[in-house]
Image (cartoon, rainbow, N blue to C red; front, side):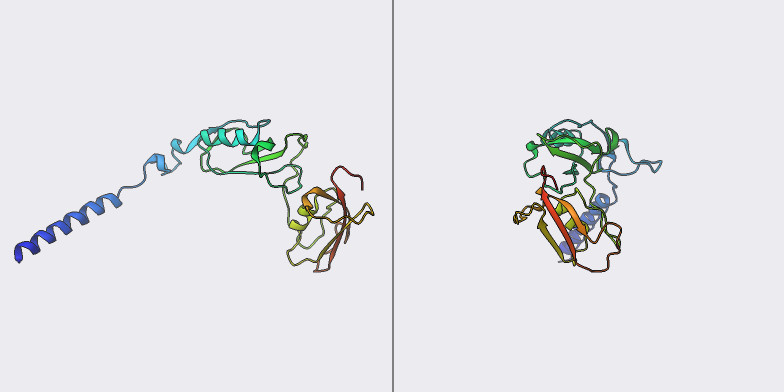
Length: 201
């Protein structure tokens, strides 16, 4: 009985020592540990290529091949459309720019559909309205709705006078709004008129 107890105790002690040795080892440089000088290891950085002008799918593939795994994309025209089929979109700009970056950096591609022209500046940022009414003229109804507080009552009517139903809000641009830009927002209802992109208000 004593012999078995000693054997079991010795085995337990060996297992505990092995576990302690494993857990006391820190991550290596490839795992993202800081070097001895406290700066990130050079193994954590890679060269991000310039993806401007490439198809979105190709850009994503090349970014991943370079070591970047956190990828995002958005509609550079500010219409709030989702890039459902990546091969149907092209890259207008990217954040961050090409160069050396930590591989855990999120790479965000500003995109438009293949047949569209890139805007001179990225219109994709959707800013929350806060307490002042922004100017939504020319923006998509979808972007306007996303910018307003979720409790806001919103009505949208067809500015063409044809009384069309506004079903896909990213395909419709705001022509007019009430309250006007700069007005104080304090829970009042908001009304928009809109037409389809490509049509005149």
